[in-house]
Image (cartoon, rainbow over all chains, first blue to last red; front, side):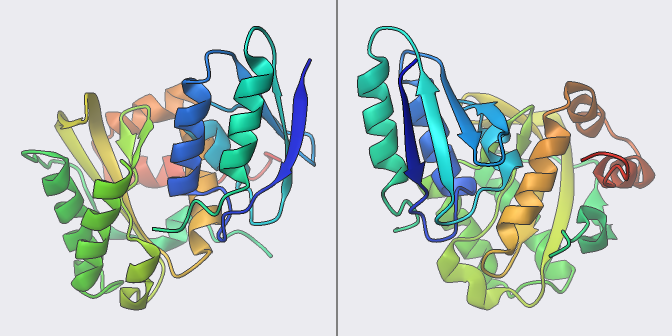
Length: 89
Length: 151
């Protein structure tokens, strides 16, 4: 299954605003995406509650996995999202 | 670093169970007013909450929204605090219905731990339902109290 590992660029971590943007993008990806922390906890990336419950901080590494048609493209664009400082307003 | 318990940041007066709002911004304003009344923030924080709501909706699923201020508003935060407002008739939130707003005031990174605890509670559909239909302050406190034996 295709996967990518990325460090969270958002300066205050994957909290409400960045988490919203990321989970909305994951929901629109067209393939199911899971996000797994280094500690091994996995959630559905499209679930904002799932993402928030992990309390992921700035610089933490997470692994994204997806399967099916378009999985690689979906992963690439989600990685780009997480590599951007989504807190910039 | 121990997580601050949600309940330690929630004053009894800050649990308001019978509210109505005309739209989500009204609900956000009321949440902001409750934070001001709790002495946690200056009035300007309410504007930061509106600004946040305009940028990205604070709806998180399970009939709950978590209005809070933008980073620019953190100067207005005097101390971390939560408020819980219940809207039994529901408030339209961009096509979703919100029954409970959990307003949050947190300086800097304090958000993350609070949101993480709250999200974990809401991931349990039974607890989310209990929060949406809560009729007493004790019920709300019990729901937000961390389970001692859980990981």
